[in-house]
Picture 1: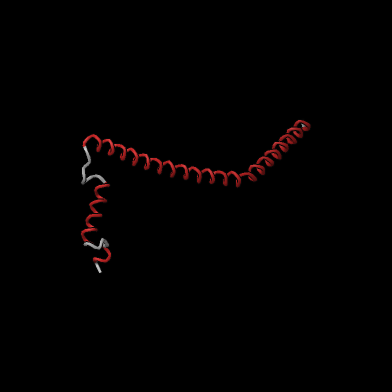
Picture 2: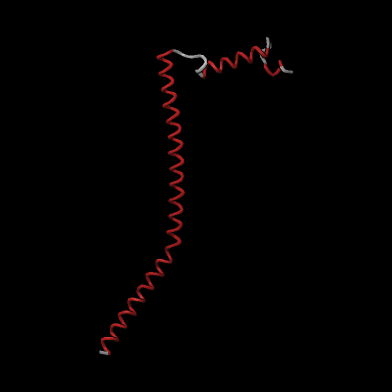
Length: 108
């Protein structure tokens, strides 16, 4: 009976030693796993930011194309169309500048 108990005690010691080796190995790689997880999180945040930017740009493009076809269908509305707004602002500047053509000189 003592022999069986001694044999079982030796097995328990071997299992304990092996568990200790596994725990030491695991503890050694935990910092690396943490570093990798942080890198993956940063990369994921970058991908998310890029996706959000692309979504915004895509929405802008859809809106621009929609306005383009709306303008083709219904004609240009000078109050809505950016090209007319720029011309309108340029003509105001020219009027403010007088005949010299320079708005900055007109205010001097």
